[in-house]
Every structure is written in structure tokens, then in C-alpha cells.
Length: 452
Image (tube, rainbow, N blue to C red; front, side):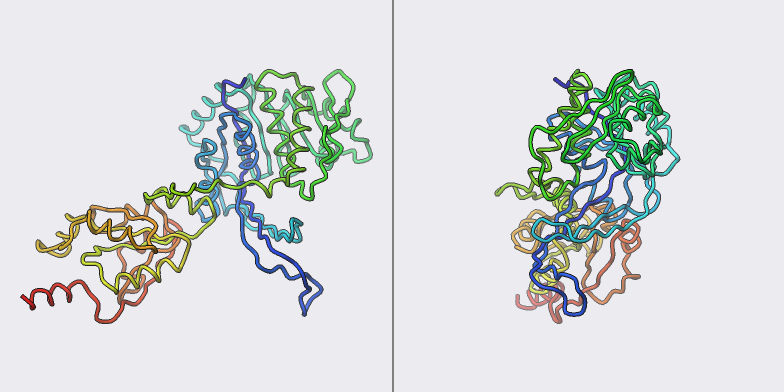
């Protein structure tokens, strides 16, 4: 039984699967046409390793670097509620790997982003990492060559807990004394610098040169070969045939399962056997492509603005927000809101409180109180959530929600908006939509007074 958390340290990236059907070739090139596509997003790298470990029932803390860009925010949304995250700063943009797939088969992968972990670590985060390591049941280093293992390597020396290191050719060598190092066969050839060795001899060689307690070289569908310090190598075949079409994520599943087993007190040979079995089942069931963010159950549609924002980011969607008084809701308002909602996947309406409206419009406004204004807006199908702010501008609300698009209606330019700089700084863009001619709350109030 695991009573202490698993700490996963490493590099996160965003995986995007574009799924469709390929039934014909492109007329201007000998390549298939993928049609009817839809996208799925999931955490990749150390993020996937952490999520898979959490699915095994353990409490998991992920220490990784995240970019302040749309893919980075999407990653944080995907991880929210599944693992605890300790966020380190990232230099550059979030690594995104987009796979174009047809009928379960990957046909093309496009990699974007250049992010690396910022080598500077402030005292607060350093103390947090040290505290986490002292209380860990096991530590898994899921290295994808983007700098986190280098930044945190000094904290891992003498941690005193089982340490599993899943290495990467572009990353540093695993620290001496690792409980278990888990390279793939190709990674083991690079680490050993002796590509002609058999996997068994490579595993024994790496135990000596890395000064590890054990090394398990993973062999895909053939399982793994385990070598222990001072002992012989052992072949460990999978208990089931892992003949799935997509082995993506199998290494993360293997190393995570082995770390969980070590944390529960299992000896290293048993832990590797568990890792082999779990990786084989993972591939047989479809691999990383089957990892999904749980959708809200019917009737559990999030109603608060932060909840909506979190779900949109978790599913890789585009968050739209707009703001205003929305006193005496009329056809112009509804038209603006419908057009705003059409720009993305969810619309949050930020509404001035009664006090804020009075400061902006005078003592006679609002005509309709904020509670009723909120209820009317929530009843519109195009509105996903409503948030009330008490300041004169929605700047603080924008900083909290971080919409991808901020919409305003009228004759503004983006430069005229007092909140435009905040929108830009938080990674969004401002869009001005024209108002419906002749529709305004001021006109309605004037008409009502004239009819008395």
C-alpha cells in the first residue's frame, strides 16, 4: 500500500491527436487526404507519466516547467484535478507534438515549440522541491531532454527514497545510485556508446557505468531485460501480447508502474515485472491515444466562470469573454453575445456590479439589479458562465480567466480599450464587433420615460 506521494520530475509537452479517415489520395501529391478530423489533447512527456501513475491510485505530484502560452495553459488545464502541480518557469514556447491519425494509425507528426526549463530556481520553489522529496514514497525522473532534470538534479542526490530514472538522449546521465534506470533499447545503445552489444550485455554494462542499482532495458513487445548490480541479466517477457498499433506512452506506463511498485515496497525484479505487464496492457488497449480528460457528466455542466475556463483549457478549446453592464438586455446585446460565442468554444460574460454601474452611468442606473441581470444572461444558450466584477474595468477578471479572445462591441479600436494591454499580456487578443444599429439601453430608457 502506498502511503506517501509519488513525485514525478521532468519535462511536460502537449500531445495533440488529429483523428480522421483516409480514403483517397491528394490529387496534387501522392499523400493521403485525412478528412472529417477532430482533435484530442492530452499531457505528454512527464505529464503523461504523472497522469498514468495517478490512474494507478497513488497521490502524484508533478514538478515541471510550464510556458505562459496557450499550449502551456492547456496543459495545466488537462492536469488540473488529476495530479498536484509544482510549476517551474519555462524559457521559450511549450513543446507541442501533433499527430495526424487515420483509423488509429499515426501518419504524420509535427513538432513545434522550443521551450527549456529556466535554470534559475528561486528559494521558495527550491524549498518546496526539497520538502516534496523528503516526503515522497518514490521519485520518477521522466526526462525528455528539456532541462528540468538538470535544474533539479542536485536536489535528488541523497533523497533517500526509491529513484527511477527514465533517460533521454538529449538529457543528462542518470545520477549514480539510482534504484532503477529504464532506457529503451535505442536509448541504451546511446547511453552505452557500444551499439553492437546485445540488450543483455548493454543492461549489464550500464549497471556498471551508471553505478545504478538496476537497469531495465525495454524491448517493446518483447518486454524488458533487467540487470542488477553484481548479478546476471534476466529476460522479462510480457504476460500478454502487446500487439496494439500505437506504442506511444508505453515507456511512461512502464516506468510509472515500476515506481509505484517500488514505493509500495516491492523488490526491483517484481517492480520491473509489474511495469512490463502494465505497459503491455496499455499498448494492447490502444496506448496514449486512449488517454482522455474526463468530461463533465450530464447535469454537472460547470456554471462558475473559473470552472468553465478550466474545462475549456483541459479540452484544448478557445475561451471567449466579453464584458459590460448589460442593463435592460436587448436585441443588440443578444446579437453581440451570439457572435462572440461563435468565435470559440465557450463564452464567459463579465458583468459590472450595481456599484460599478452607478459609478460609470450615474445614480439612476442600473435599471435592473445585478442578480436579475446575471440570471437573464445565464438563461441565454450562447452564454456558458457569468462573472460579476466590482471595479470600473474588468482587468482583474481578465487576469484571472485569461481568455483567448476578449470581445467588445462598439466603435472602439483595440488600442482604445483600457483592458487591451491586460488581454495582450495574458496571451489573448481583443476583437471589436459592430453593434446593431439603433439598439441601446440608453434609447430604451429614454423611450420609456417619453411614454409616461
